[in-house]
Structure formats: structure tokens, C-alpha cells
Image (cartoon, rainbow, N blue to C red; front, side):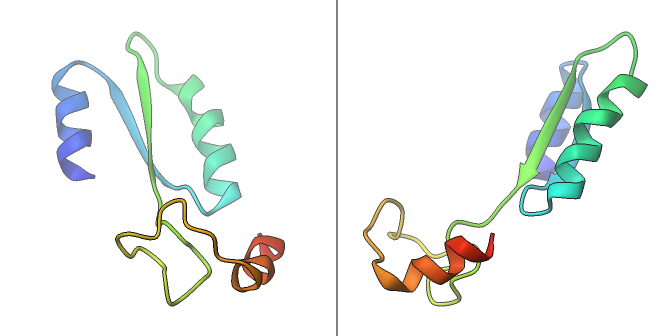
Length: 78
């Protein structure tokens, strides 16, 4: 994430790094963009694939696969 933030700053952007699994940070991120003037603002959202399912959280090769009942409880949690 640091690499992307550094690149955007070099292109003249203001940057905000947030946890995309935290709704409060998402809301504050959008609200805080008003405090930056004169430059575009980029919100960089950190996230983990499969958040809430320990066996697949941030693991490769799980993107788009059918998870059946295992995922149901995690989805309802969020």
C-alpha cells in the first residue's frame, strides 16, 4: 500500500489510507476529502479477501469460488 500511496503523492494527489472493513473509516475517509484543497484526493482502501472466514482470509485461489454454508454466517455478520 505504501508504494501506491507514494506514487499517488508523486502525481500530486492527497492520499488517505483506510481499512475498508471498517465502515466508520470509510465514512470518515469520504468526509475528510473536503479538508484537502487544491489537489485531487485518492482514498486507498486496505482489505483482505474472504474477511471473516479464517480458513480463506487473504488466501490465494479463493476468489470467486463457491463457499456454500461456510460463507453464509460470515456474510450475515457483515
